[in-house]
Picture 1 (cartoon, rainbow, N blue to C red):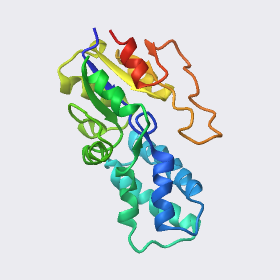
Picture 2 (cartoon, rainbow, N blue to C red; picture 1 turned 45 degrees about the vertical axis):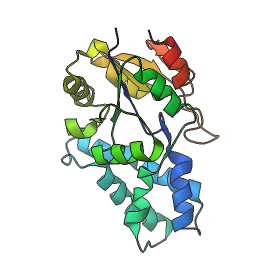
Picture 3 (cartoon, helix red, strand yellow; picture 1 turned 180 degrees about the horizontal axis):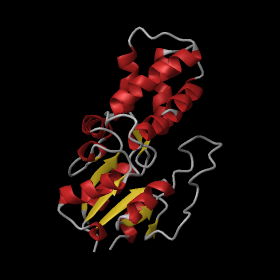
Amino acid sequence: MVHALIFDVFGTCVDWRTSVARDVAQHIPQVNALDFADAWRAEYDPAMARIREGQRGYIALDNLHRENLDRICERFGVTLPDPESLNRAWERLDPWPDVVRGLQALKRKAMIAPCSNGSIALMTHLARYGGLPWDCILGAEIAQAYKPSPAVYMASCAALQLPPHEVMMVAAHNSDLAGARAVGLKTAFVPRPTEHGPGQILDLEPTEAWDLIATDFLDLARQLT
């Protein structure tokens, strides 16, 4: 039995690329907004890797996004009068069309919560913006670590007082599911083939025999027993 579903958020639940680009276009109309959004996102994993590797202590993703924004502005040769406003673009990401209805259907079957690298504040703002009906907020901040570190998945299970085999990780990223499976969680793959735009080449299909493979969250709800 699966008693809780925990979700990757960026890319799996929300369309970060076009949402961030929309804010970029408003703040920096002279740049290619999608290119800027892609470059900003490309700094995401390297920034977290330095924390995972022990080069610096845990820092909330909001602050990493802000540091990365300064780096990308310099690369694009732009100066922002109010960078904090643009940094909050990550709080205004549109859910994929199936997500809200799918989460509502899944919530009738199990507890649901984000297991994101985003902070509790960031996940709360996103939930309020997009109408995501979480039961609680889990993920990186409660573990003081970043996925796919085992501590993040284990801290989420511990917070729910459930053993890992009763918790299912839902993600559009095979690497995230591999991290969850390695510590005993169930896994569900839901592809988001346009997360990175029309040229996406990664995570178009499952790379392992995950416990469930669904076309979207509504399909996942139909499959979940």
